Image (cartoon, rainbow, N blue to C red):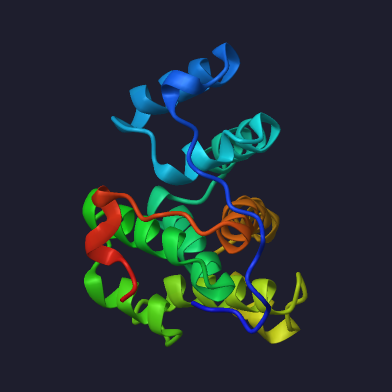
Length: 190
């Protein structure tokens, strides 16, 4: 997941709870309550509370889309793979396989950039890949395949919410690589 661009002179450490402002502590408490721990990515976002609040708010909105939890997780994983974010690939692979019981072959195909066996999920993954790689542009054929697979027009716009969400976290990891949490380490890229 290395870039041809020079490494960034910026490095953010995850914000420690003890040194966080009261506002950030409150957000970190909510995160810990939801996940059981504060993922390093979110603790790193806490260096800029506006980013953390924006990310969590957009994540909440993405959870309210008409896409299923599995579909949403595959959108997030696919965008992370296409953007080359090692942290998010590990996190979303873990969540997809562990919590949402997505089969290992589907996760492996997304990570390898190959087709997914399920035609409907493949249409979703292919459209996300194209939108990410072509900066929001998608071929008519790709859009038609998505719709023919059983998705609705408005769900194309819902994909953009997930892609936007991952743009924030993927780009933060590019600017300042985040250490993969122990909870996600089994899915880390070697």
